[in-house]
Length: 163
Image 1: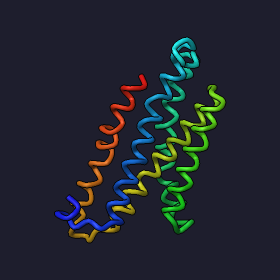
Image 2 (image 1 turned 120 degrees about the vertical axis):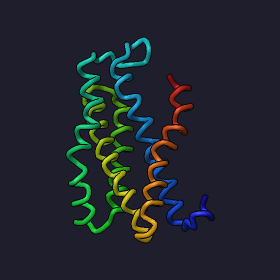
Image 3 (image 1 turned 45 degrees about the vertical axis):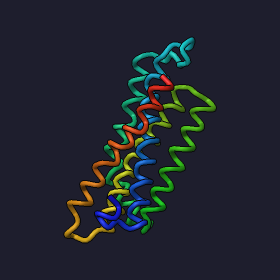
């Protein structure tokens, strides 16, 4: 595929990073609600349906409002890579905090950070698309559409094993 579509090393690197980023988002997002909802004897926090639903919904809610702000921030900082780095730090830091001190607040904050990080995924798309000529726009979109599906495929055995 790399030779057939004449992809550069930079394009391949962005694609691989996008898959890794999506994989981490899929894996973390999948377990938030069940971790909050499951009884303590099954390894959960037994926070109840209302709390678990809030934790699960926080991801999507913050993503809706942050998309536009992410692009404003990347233009203001003049660095999409810096914004992606900030997103990775937010996801890593809050997920680790939720791991060390699992409760409603830390899981909710971690879900917000995950939603912000997911909003930053759109910056990967822009970075990737900028490396193609206008004539190759359809190829860029086609390749990018595979990344979340591939991440889901890669993470499925991990999710199956740990549930």
